[in-house]
Image (tube, rainbow, N blue to C red; front, side):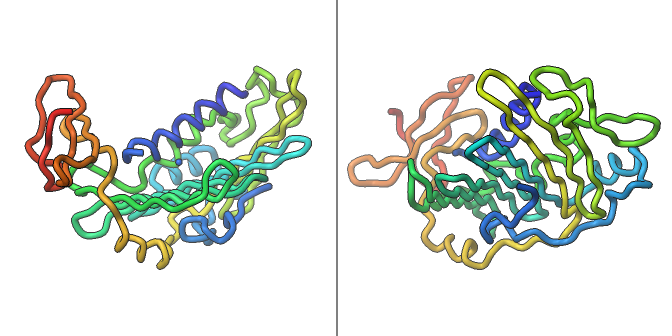
Length: 267
């Protein structure tokens, strides 16, 4: 079960990273990327596996929260995949972290807000949106359900997979339908103790909105420190007091003359 959990975390973290850098459902301290709102009523007891899976495959927006509960700590990750932005964040005993990715005009903006022991501060970056072929939502809800891998089809219904294996505590698994939300999870146990994990997928096709305070931050955006374009990798810097990008490498050895309108120099 832990292996499958790691696959999910790798998936969602990669979504955040490729921009150049990521209890039950909650609003993540009021910064849940548009807040939790009601979505389509697709998670019902009488819904078939195909009904749910097809609805998720065609979802234009949704939200997923993963919560880990151990003896003395709780941490929850929330991800919002909307039609025009992406959000990821977490709430833990040591603080919170929020990440937004959105396009406005010709620029792609990323906003990171860290407020935990290791880091405190806000970083706002921008790059030309044409450098990346972004489509929102970035990961389909059906693909995410497959990658979590804890539910299967049985007798035409969506059920928890009791044969998940690994450190899974047999009999602890469950699945709960709440109309616009689907909850499922279970427990793992090893030499470090027991941990409860719960997933919640909700807000399918809901109308999420990017918070106004996040939109306003674009006025303070600086050029992205790292940019990947046409297979090449570039890093922001200065040359003789002039803003520029330094060429790092590309598989074919080709480099751009400019990145984000700034000149490119060899390192």
